[in-house]
Amino acid sequence: MRLKIGSRGSQLALWQANHIATLLRGQSHEIEIEIIHTTGDKITDVALAKVGAKGMFTKEIEEALADKRVDLAVHSLKDLPTELSKEFEIAAIPVREDPRDAFCSVEYNSVQYLPQGARVGTSSLRREAQLRAIRADLIVHPLRGNVDTRLRKLEAGEYAAIILAAAGLRRLGKTERVRQVLSVDVMCPAAGQGALGIETRAGDSAVREALAFLDDPAARAETQCERALLGKLGGGCQVPIGANAKWRDGRLQLQAVVASPDGKLLLRESMTGDDPVALGELAGEKLLGRGGAAILDQVYGKGTVLPQQP
Image (spheres, helix red, strand yellow):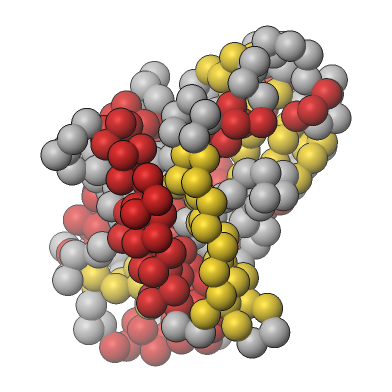
């Protein structure tokens, strides 16, 4: 079968698209990759939390899918809004990479060893809030750009440390500056972090069947749970929300966090269940009831629609 993959043009996005292309070629499919530039790729000088555009890394790719210019799209799952348009579906979620965040530094071995008032780079409100919860003295500064750009800024001494997803660093083979992989208890990851989402047109059974071998039941259940929590809280990955679900002994264990941007208020919820969506939604309801709604109102203002974006 001849298939065309739509992908962003960043080094990591192309690694992901080529990884899926290789697996599909192994099943005797002919694969072509088309690079599509998204809104998020064009806005590089503003912290993502301040942009607020829904699907800013996916909209143009979905337009190409709808127009049948491409047959499937390979996304970082955390970039996909929790509610997809009825035109599309997530046909496969492959085996997941490590979902945790990585502390990268030239000089320092961990968050604890950073000097007072050290400058730390991250574009994520989720990371910033959790970082402030453990080290309120740190100066957290926005950091945008692809993985190479961020690492270059670290090497140049612009930051004492930066926080990146461990998955992206591992996929690109750029782990030399990773000093500490942060435990979920310290830095709860973004919903879907470390997982890929392969999006197709809804009802395209031929493409869905071609991709079926890629779908990993554990990765799908874990990320369904995390995304259900995110959906219940109405937020995207730039809201200060963390979610991490893991299969243990035949059951799903979910850890979730909602934090105020200054890190002074940090709500945690830990639950176990069998139904991924029900578990995620129940944990979301509990967090909202315990003060999560007030935190989210503080971030975006009362009555505003919370953005869904990476």
